[in-house]
Amino acid sequence: MTNPYIPILIMGGLALLLGVGGLAASAVIGPKRYNKVKVDAYECGIQPTPHAVGMGRFPIKYYLVAMTFIIFDIEVVFLYPWAVAFSELAVFGLVAMMGFLFLITVPFVYEWRRGGLDWD
Amino acid sequence: MNRIAPMLAPAGPAVDFSQDTIWISVIKAVAIMVFLLISVLFALWFERRLIGRFQQRLGPNVRGPFGLVQSIPDALKLVLKEDITVKGADKLIYIMAPVISVFCAFMVFAVIPFGPEVRIPFTDLVTPLQLTDLPVAVLYILGITGLGVYGIVLGGWSSGSTYPLLGSVRSTAQVISYELGMGLALVSVFIVSGSMSTSQIVSSQQQLWWSIALLPAFVVYILSMLGETNRLPFDLPEAEGELVGGFQTEYSSMKFAWFYLAEYINMLNVSAIATTVFMGGWRAPWPLSAINDGMFNEGWWPLLWFLIKLWGFMFFFVWVRATLLRFRYDQFMHFGWKVLIPVALAWVVAVAVVQGVRQFSGIDLQTILFVLAGLLVLLALVMFFIPEKGAKDKAGGAGSRALTGAGTPTIEPKKDEYFDAFAGGFPVPPLPGQQLPPSKRRARVTTPAAPETDEENSDG
Image (cartoon, rainbow over all chains, first blue to last red; front, side):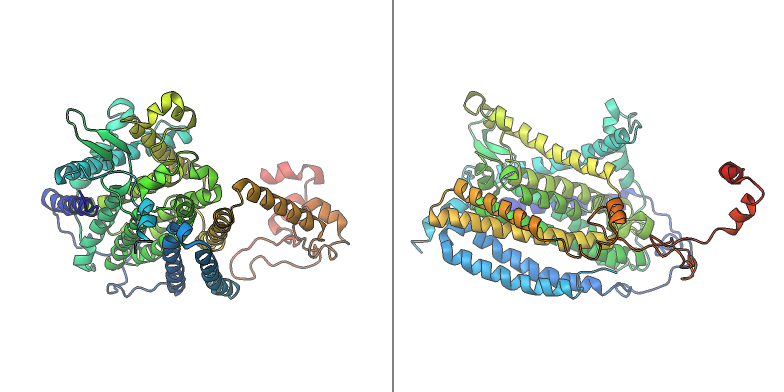
């Protein structure tokens, strides 16, 4: 096999087949007994508050984590090719990457000191 | 282009897949899926049995020898249960989410090397014990793990219910935060092995496992691995005391089974990555690897070492679960962002600088390490002579300092201050130094009795 991605497609096809097949099997085999309460959203014994999909609220902190994550994930993705080509890029690569890391660290420290990483 | 081409060559896979036909790939893929399914069934038994041992009870021991087949009826039961789709759910995404989870969980093992090249019995075919390998295999693994988060976040979001939504945002924040620590821990391995291909990383560990050479990265990886798979002590998305079942609250039957399966396969995934990247992959451990010219590193033997290491990590998962309590969410995020990521970053910088000095200036590793050790000792000495911050303020309270230890700040006792435990509307314990007013009930009970026997009397 010259193309290393074809086996991954095969694996993906099999995994998808298993995933969908399992759901289909349970839909066919499993019993179906309708009950009005059973299809309600879960609540601890009281009437659930109705809210549409995606309308529930959650703390804004999660957005902050997501944004910080994007910055750091990009950093990690940039680090990978440099790490693999470490010897070829030599001193230039090392110095450039340390500069890049420094530039990422400054806002990280800023966010930390301003309490952006605190959960209260 | 000509200058770059030979340099990129070692970054590719270290094994030859050219003999693999499409049917061999299909057979390997099926074998991997069967291996994973059986491993998960075994892992369920393994975990319950071990937790039982840790808690001084027996664990499952009825079905089959040592209760080994207990997981099979458990799994079958889930297929036979009713598949409930809740009324408020966004149907399509609600059904898709578990499939995404399980799909992404299965895909990681496509690039994990189980062993070196072997001859398939009864044929002349020589093929590596690995489905495929890419020049960017570890990046592919991280990408697939990142996609796996979609299963969680969409599953919780589409349920149209409160607890799943909270569980899914928690879980997402947790997985992405710990993925950073994980990704950064792997960078130093790429620097020293010069490749992202899993087989190349394994072959670069011929002399020394990276878990020994890059111990801090290994520790960071191990900790993020627990956070990444939502396992205790980091199982906050499913903290049943707060969130019922987290993102899978509204799921039942096979949909729930897929989430459950994905969780256990993900444990196997991160263990396999740890084995491959840090523990020498399929290579035999040291004393064995030296026997008979590396006899144990050839043929089908490596499969055994791989499985032993893999299940070693699985044991670690269970051990941690049995030992540690669940973290609070703020502690957890604090640990991820303020401890793991800075440590991982600092380690990447340290490895890059040491490796850079070693490769580009010609000084050998030993000299660098000696110089670094010298610098550290010097730093420690300097730290020793710098007076501790705020030590002067505490000079007066020498007696209390001796009691509490030099490092902890002491709060001056405020004996006369009246402490109202119910000031905030709910009872709070007194701070150090503050004292509760004597309880009225206690005063009533102890008044007629003699002072030295009041302990016994108040109980009766």
